[in-house]
Image (tube, rainbow, N blue to C red; front, side, top):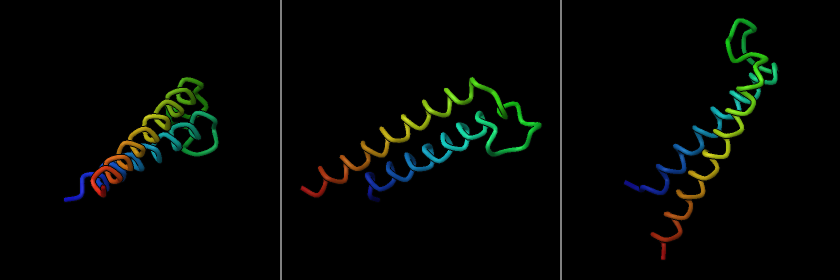
Length: 69
C-alpha cells in the first residue's frame, strides 16, 4: 500500500472538513439550526483545521518524494 498517497488523501479530507467548518462559522453554508452556524469560534477552528490538513498533505507529498528517490 502506498503510504504517501494514503496520508495525502487523509490530509485532503481534513482540509475539506476545515473549509466546511470555516464557511459554517461565516454563515455561508449549513443549516441555521447548527451550533456552528454564525459562530466566530468555528471560523478559528475551521482555519486551524485547514492548516493541519495542508501540513498533512505536505507530509504525504514528502513521503511520496522520498520513496521515489
